[in-house]
Length: 96
Length: 170
Image (cartoon, rainbow over all chains, first blue to last red; front, side):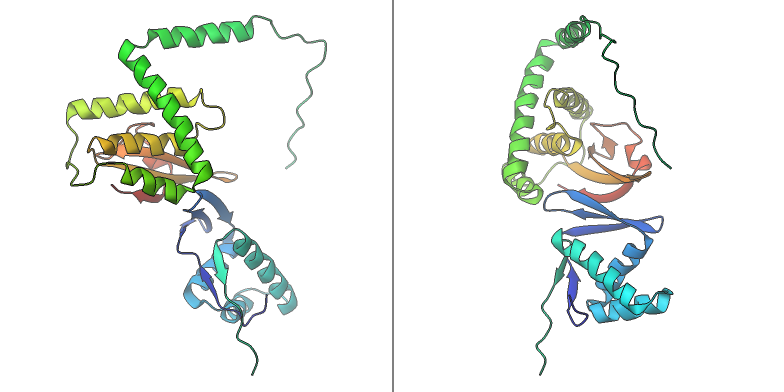
């Protein structure tokens, strides 16, 4: 994963926030997943921005965390979401 | 907080030999207490639950749902169920729950609700499939069917106890 990648939520996923956390229901197979408050905020930013770099910047502003740690955690979460078909990560544009 | 480990059953403790037999007798007695029509419907539902489980395994939830929609008559559904139709829907919900107990690992609320919803829509009734979630230590999702706002295969307050996730309208 690199921060230049575009990312979008899967339209077949229903998102519902509950008391700061959230549930994601994948309509294709009716599996559901939970996100804690930080994961919920990341999901919302993915929906709003569609851009990993923007998500990273917003999270960096909102949370007191070192950037390499934030990048690693973000990469891990996005990887899990993508592996379960909850988000779609597009390839980054080639460098010119 | 660490959960206490459950202690293994001591090899010296013997379960009463009669328990499986008496459980079977109780189930048989409950089945025989059903009316003849209910018994026929029970078997039909039991078989259909296996079919729905198979469909979900082969196709996914969305495709299963679309297939069942195609198998329902198209056209305008009636606006409201009559009293007789509501009684039928409640019976259907009740018997599907019972049949679900005899479909090991396959009688989940989603499968039962898909079946009940489809059977009601085949009759032209405006049944909704609802999915909600409760938040305890972990999230737990649950599916049920409503007809005219009344749950037909669950407690009347299920919609209040759970946070709605989605509703599949007819």
